[in-house]
Image (cartoon, rainbow, N blue to C red; front, side, top):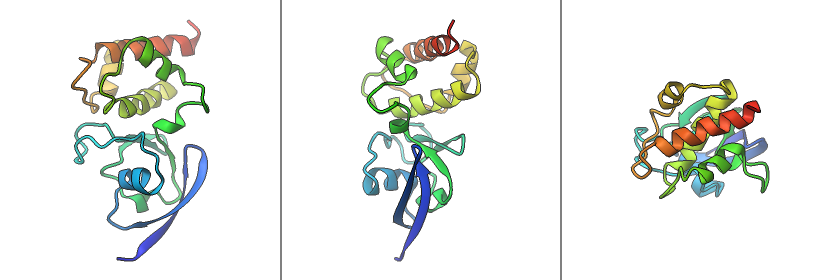
Length: 158
C-alpha cells in the first residue's frame, strides 16, 4: 500500500511524515514519530486514554486517521509541559496522587487542559462532565477532579 505524505503541526512544531491511509493517528504518533506518551487503552474510542487535541477539540487518536492530520494543529501530552517544566495540571496530578498505572493519565491531562483553556473556573460538575469520556480503573476519579480544580484555582491566581 502506498504511503501518503502528511504535513502537520504537533506540539507547536512543524512535522512531516509518511503513513498508510489506514494507520491511525495513535499509531503514527507512537510508531512513526516516537511520541509514546499517548496511550492505547481500548482501540475503539471508548476509554479516552489516547485523547489528543486537534485544532482545539478533543479527539480519540485511535479513531482519527494519520492522514486526517494534514494541515491540522495537534497537541499530545508531550506538548503540555514547557520543556522540563511541568504544566500546573501535571504538577497537580502528582500532588493529588491523581495517577496510578498511568494508562489514562495522558488522556486525562489533555482533556483537562482543553477544558481549562476554555474555562479556567469550572465547577466540579463541569469537570466531571468534561472528563466523562476518559475512563480510569485505578484512582476512583476523586483525585483527578481535585487536581483539575486545584490547577484551575492556581491558573486563575485565586
